[in-house]
Length: 237
Image (cartoon, rainbow, N blue to C red; front, side, top):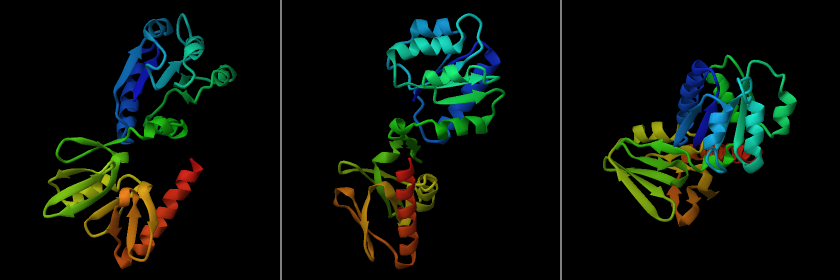
């Protein structure tokens, strides 16, 4: 994720920087950069199409205001997400005409940033979500089909017939993966990614790339319910 904050108030820039960085990491996004600019002119001097994924413009700035700066961005970049940060909604109509994704009112707190990112359509970036593993490495969540615990090691079965091994406990792996609503433990030692479930029968979950994993009888109803809930969430996105 590449983001920029354009605000002429240093305190507001720093608060938004800290909260945005925290929320993005909480949600599992890779944070490549969050650049800070004190004016619209300074930002536009370095801006080019495709450079950023997400922009935060303070509307009330000395010199070029946020609406004017955003209008310049929209001349060349139609896909970047834009959030307007302000103390009032006086410019609401203008911001909507520029295809603003959200309107963030000051003073904001952590939960306001969470709400903003929940509302903004970050579907394109969902595939970039990463998880930090106990060995210090990271892995794209969407690369993981399932994990299996054996002999004090976890084997991660990844897309394109790849595998990754690391030494950790099943409990630790459950804490890491099952914090994401697409992962669920289907039997002792095995965690599946519901995203890649193709079908479920009386005792087996069939995943993409011809993987099959067993499901304990006592967990079958729970797995079916979790999969149905996951599919419902996807249809609503």
